[in-house]
Length: 173
Image (tube, rainbow, N blue to C red; front, side, top):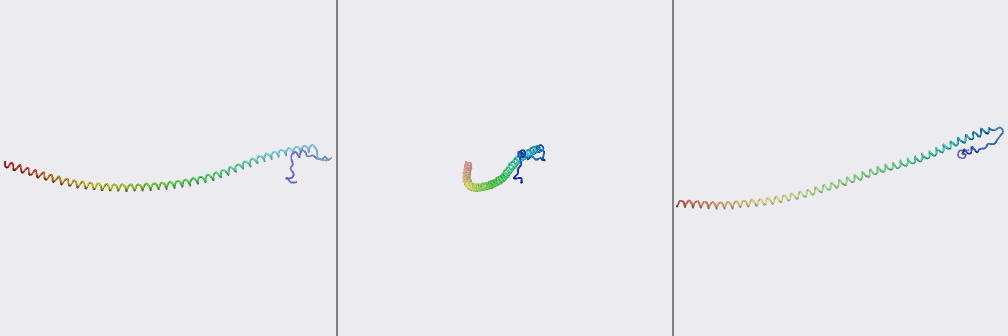
């Protein structure tokens, strides 16, 4: 008989009856042996059931550990992907920020150049206006000096004429 077709249980052992023969085994010994064999088989079967339960528990625990491992691996992969995505996003943001800053700097420089050109042009206009005003003032000053000199010369001429007149009056008189 193969192990698959014949499975002996403690009940089978206890229920087994032997035919009585004249020169057979001692019935008390046979019954005692059957009892001990049935008890041992009970103990072995209980131990086997306990071991099977323990094995089931360990298989379930192993399954749980494998699921956790898979979840952890998935989590690690996701974390790596998130880190890579975050790094890529940060790189893109940094590049955009750099481009915006560069554009802003170029705009500021362009405005500063335009302002400098405007200020230089205004300064040139102011310089031209001041030169013109200075030239006008110098011409007016020269004209004033000429007029004043003429006035003074006329006045001196009159003073000279008055002195001559007084000298003549004194000499006549």
